[in-house]
Image (cartoon, rainbow, N blue to C red):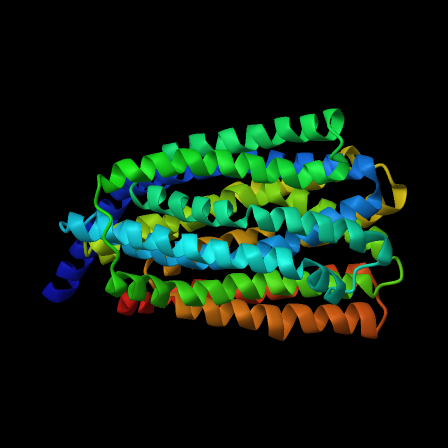
Length: 455
């Protein structure tokens, strides 16, 4: 063995020892950022679960209308998520840097932009709600309920978009616990308001949407008070920082819009199936059950964005790479355990959320097929979060758009409607898109090309 080979082996052993010692630190770092996000997702899950449960008690048409209007509402709110993604990437780096004035300016610029976007989109949502619901080919028995619910949700868009953006600011400032407490309060209030409005007022099914708006408004007020303390009287709008936020955020906006538009088109496809009402109601219920599994996956997605953003701001690229991999591994492990639990208890869970035997059967089919892709969804979300935190949002945009519009939607229509194979084939088409998306995102992060996106 040559001297060069011996030196190389020694270096490898030393590096391996360093990596072994750093692993607990990386795990602790990822978990510290992630667990408050998991708690937020946990309470939001029960908030959504309450909506679905109450809607189911009021009838399958109302339940389908809640799912339909929620999808459109989520589509409208994607502009807020886009601004927030750019906000997290920029603010997290400035927060860990020396220029505190630029940091405060970035915070004010981001919140101001979310304010303007929320007001505009909320007004458009209220005006065009009937046209949107009609364009989605909703059954006549669902349409009237969907229009009313969407108009109420649209009224709350202004506060919700600001809340999302301010939560992104707080995460970037490593104030995850503050965000957690605020969102837990919002979730609890939503459940309380649902019970009060449905049972003790004349609102009826409208109370489902009104409770969401009321709880979001309360959380918005608390976040606003915290943000004002962070700004400390500095209210400087920066066109330069806005350009940076938008340049990073707009691809994420395209991703979010693509996902939500895809979900909306999926409702249209489901409406073309013979048993459309039952399948749409089952899909609404299945999504809420999946939300329990998405909790840690989305939490690690947001955690990875903050962790990578902070480390990139400190120019610690190797640590960012290791932290991204560690966070993704934790996400996949936790989600895999949750999938196992849900599969074993699928029928009891479905029976709690719905009493219609036909809907329960559809829910069971949905869960058994879609649970296969959940670990891959967790991997994709973690990797996408890391890429977004690094500012490499254009790559995530390409992969997301391709998986939705070149795989999921064409396959869903082709198999479910054209060949008439029903709901089972649609759920398989969704799985195929998730497999491909996870492979592309993971390959991009492992390549290290995201470092080139540093700002």
